[in-house]
Image (cartoon, rainbow, N blue to C red; front, side, top):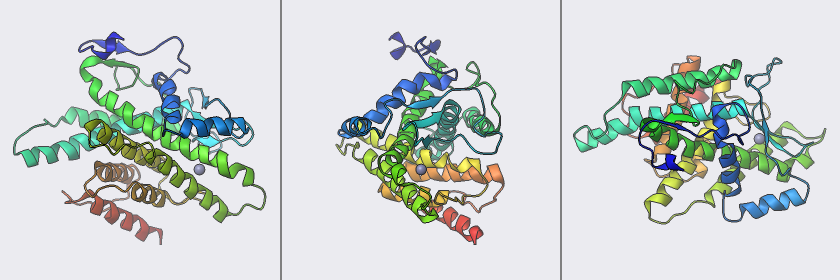
Length: 333
Ligand SMILES: [Zn+2]
């Protein structure tokens, strides 16, 4: 475990017991662990659902060096499999999610958080790195590329959770924290489908039933994660709360980058899911999570050329968030 205190040189987390081929494989055991620990009573719920035959005891990670989009145009996004009772999640989707998380978080730090800190301090507390901003952009480009085409994640050149330079570990390790929470949100959502919805689905299930199931799965996932938050006035509890909030928001944001529109058929519109999740988290007005949501919307804007009107230096990212949502809504009419 010498990597814990390692300050220079390469840290390689790969172990022969890892499953999978993509660098995100080093976190597979951690996502299962974090999911089971969602809140103090959740592990008992998981065991109970397995005992009832409604949940497989094994997370269904699908391996394969292939893009998320299948030849028929469908996406291999996470789902609850009614036959096997497994929560299925493709390893390429997990790579995509880690890269999205890295790029959203680092862009937030380097373009919003650090400049704000420097402005309030009156001097440069955190130097801004154009190189880091560029790398974050390249990570987003790689993530969205994985949707349509699979190319190998270059562990020697790109940030990744498996092989890293100790000198550059901070952004990677912070990304790991948000990534495991983002996966937790997705797994809790699918868990709810297996627990409550899949055995209700038949030929009579209407679109509005599906929409209700989706909302209930999002709400339950947030509620379960909130039950795992500590409100003790200590830094560790505060940073864990922030990780849960940002992770859950990234879990929904990750669904945004698949299409130019947010409209769903059997899912609520993505912007409505996002707003619902954010509001259910009871964020304070200047919570970093509002700004992260704005960074995600801005990425989506430039990805599909929506040209929304953005304020130069918004006073509040909560206001900015609702101003952009209003523009998305206005174009849906
Ligand atoms: Zn769902």
